[in-house]
Image: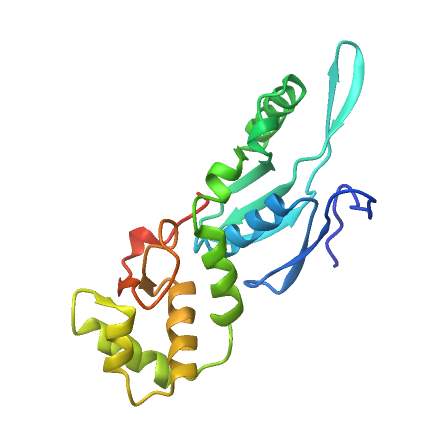
Length: 220
């Protein structure tokens, strides 16, 4: 049965709206700001996030005798079954009184469902070079490359504790350049190879190492 959001996102004259593919499921997730779009990319990269839904619920509440509706931005389901309702808010608007009231309404709603409630701003979603790197990885790191090539790249990296990307390229000289970079970017996106994607733009000077399980989390 097709997913039906609690509120339909309609075109608007000012600002930006669009859809972003959630690569894990192939679903198109609607967004109403670039910050929301970037949260979708962050959630897709997080290995613990299984599913995401936009405009997932309508929460009714009363304030000063008036009835109101609150539509949080997203619901994410983790692979351990935990559910989070997510509000994405620009930092400059985070502490507006009307928004603070909505956060409290959202938290109480989630407590009743035994869910969790979180507010994300650009501090969590857009730190330094993270989104630039995710954009690169989502484009080049999802292109087709053979398992044999990826296995060979991992085998070469395993020979040392860590390597610069250019050193790994030299050790995989028998692989053509395009296939090599596709494999490396895909392995980084799948988090089988670890590198700093927050503080450093991915380049031939990036330091690579085999990932450990504890590093594979972004949202939770």
